[in-house]
Length: 159
Image 1 (cartoon, rainbow, N blue to C red):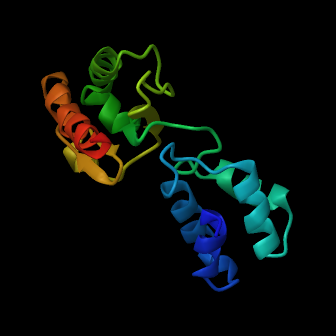
Image 2 (image 1 turned 180 degrees about the horizontal axis):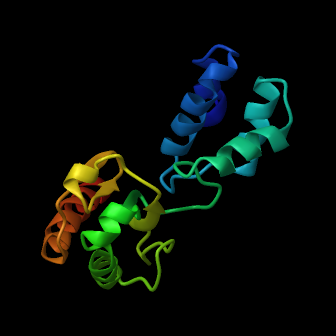
């Protein structure tokens, strides 16, 4: 059975389940994104248009229609994080990941660096998420060690 159809079959055709379904579909793909075909199947499942599903997918920053890395790094760009050292963190992340800009994916497809409007952890600013894991009170010196945790996960996963 197609993976998307398998995911859809687990849920009732209740529009309140739409975000859960879209997240599960995205998380089922190694490149963390939702394809055109996925959106079409979801639209048919909910008896709506593909355009309405596309609108939902593109509205939420945690969802993507473009392939990304295995691990998604979301760096908070709130004013609080900015004041607490965001520019230096971004510079360090770009250097460590060997990418030129936020929004890019590493050549090995292990990481994508994205902005987030706010992670809701201002008391621990500056902060970032890697997948579902939050890291706060960040300094440029902590970045390499944190990324190594996920690089090691990739090495163990690829063996």
